[in-house]
Length: 308
Ligand code: NDP
Ligand code: OXD
Image 1 (tube, rainbow, N blue to C red):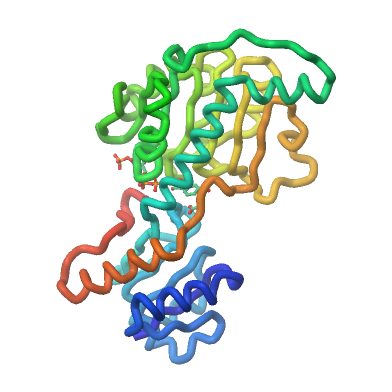
Image 2 (image 1 turned 180 degrees about the vertical axis):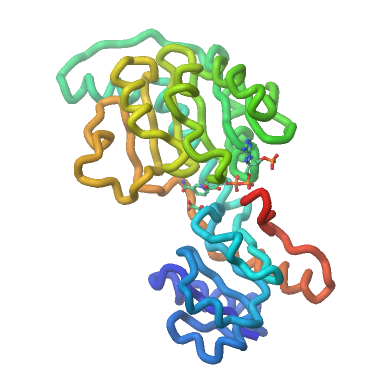
């Protein structure tokens, strides 16, 4: 039984070591040394699969080396192949830490103070209590729920927006497209943690940004294509959006001419909010080997019709 590694070559040795200690029954191969394609039962990949992947006629599971699966062609995946995400609590914890940092940066006006510092201005701004700040999270999956859990002890007024009803600690869950405007209208800071699907592409646009309270903050840690960047730029320049923390962009790395590089009210990070954790990822693979033996559903399997 063999697993073929097609993700970041820099991490291959760590995956090999961790798999050989936690799942010694799996032979580890690294792309492009696939050997006999008929022996490949599992694939671990981050990029879209090359055409060659059609030759893995005994493929059972495609492990996505991360939380998002928008890069894969779900319709083109053979019917007998399951797509599984390698998410775990530590990956969710790392994301929650980033969201906490970004919310606090916007809550305490840090982008404005940075600009003041650059321009030599010593100018205190009024303090808003955490209990007066309304923070909303779009997408209450593994990561969104972890972020809410991390924000709760700080006393913010929390809310969430999700396809189905979920628990929001101390706050309301707004559900579906019919409650999106109402949700946005009460977010002083909104955090996008949705998966990218045809339904969510471009969901942060001129119309939805206009629903936010004047001067609201935006945090995007989902995918760049959730946001219509020109619309955010216009909203920032008009002051309708007061500041943005962007970890993801439509084009990564950002092009040299991207206006967000130098925008005084944008904090840009290079898609580092979270990342797959090798031990946690291997634990999912080990659990799924057991489930496969017992004929039980896989852990973290993507619903290919929903697209996440
Ligand atoms: P999950 O699949 O666990 O959760 C997705 C959530 O979004 C679910 O609660 C789902 O609702 C909700 N949702 C999906 N579509 C809609 C919709 N159309 N309207 C409303 N709600 C919707 O994903 P994760 O939490 O694990 O990850 C979320 C995303 O975060 C990833 O897809 C990835 O793009 C991004 N990410 C970014 C990283 C970074 O470094 N910047 C790192 C890791 C992930 P329901 O529960 O009803 O199905
Ligand atoms: C992921 C990511 O989806 O790092 O895992 O963006």
